[in-house]
Image (cartoon, rainbow, N blue to C red):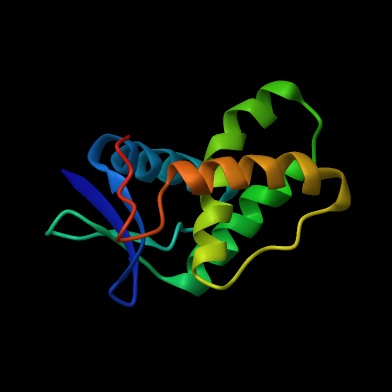
Length: 127
């Protein structure tokens, strides 16, 4: 069973049910923390639609919070959600520009996450 994240009917991430639901839950919690809507709308048919401008603003807010501190707990709590979100933005053709001090580490994680997330419809994640 999968939980696709779609933009205009195209699957950007055909997540496994559990990882897809976990991501949506984490995003809702983070949205409350950063004071921005996620741009993610769960659908009745078991997927999640992405409103790109709203989602991009949410990820920008999440990244701003992440980059405003060097606190290891804040970084640890936000990192997985942030990296997954950055991969989705790249797949949507709307990547964020990272600060030079984050490019290498987050870039490596984005590559690893993107591989684990498959390639949209064809590469369904087992998570």
